[in-house]
Length: 252
Image (cartoon, rainbow, N blue to C red):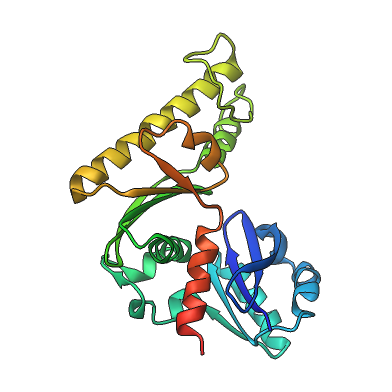
């Protein structure tokens, strides 16, 4: 029997089939905005729900409208659907923040995935729609983090709100400065974010007096791994691993 877990992000929705050993056996993805149409939801879910699967399905979701549509479609097929923040996560991780309701499900899933994968104090940098930095201290205490504008969103908005600045693909071989607009933009985003990332890592390390394990995930993880002053680990499935651990420990 297989399990289904899902991660509904602002840009992409991923659903994974998990085997009995809690390993990913298959992955499906779609743009989240497409799931606002019921027909697309049914078409996306149909091949997944044909599998022999456990009736209890859990999601991390930061897009309530999409989660509502998916969960209704799943419940209509006689499955049970859970959003991870509705589960008693404090049984598996201590959450030391001001307002639990405001915490993104993906961020707490990242923290759980990192801690139970590496069993040490970690800083997870997720290059998503926003670039987030999440702190998990040993022995399993989520301490909050930092949220900055995402790279792709920043590039798109700079194009949208200016008359002549183009959308461009970020390259890792940027010059220090540019002699044309695209090279100048590439230099600004690459070196600007490099400085931002390294400065935040430095400040958090000093604040917590901790040499964090640095875990990178998301679209720009590979590019920026070359420009971070500390040793890093890239784990593109860290969010999914967190959701898997939640399923394993809290869904009976």
